Image 1: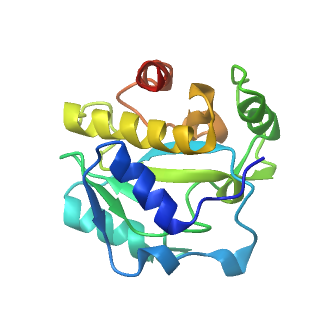
Image 2: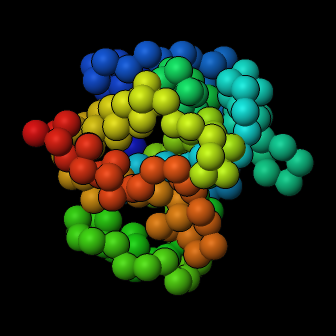
Length: 196
């Protein structure tokens, strides 16, 4: 069980991992904490945006849209590998997911299939949206995949977590497909290698 880091420590952890970070507006105080608690945190969740164009993608993830107010994540990883920080605190990214998956993340075990949506993930995960159409054809540049690896490793180091603490949205909530275009198993292997 871990309380979320301070925004300053979060930023420092990302920079220490060698990431290029862009701070967007009042990101450190932009959150949805009035909708419920944030924390304890147990892992990192990776998403794709189903958008194209970095500027538009960052704006949507910061501000949200009709029916889903922002922030929609903590950071947006654009195709050039930049991590745009858009919020810090509770964010509308994970939604309801499977309590068995959460227990597996906490225990550092392999994930069971997500077959329920009964647990608030916005409370328990750092979330990163990755600029991609999510159609399985839109490429994932190496700079972007490297940034996903580094972001994950940075937060795992800060919390003394291991690679099973990095999950995809599709592993959390039944019916979700993101991220599409690479496997979370492969990404966890990359993160584990980096942590060594």
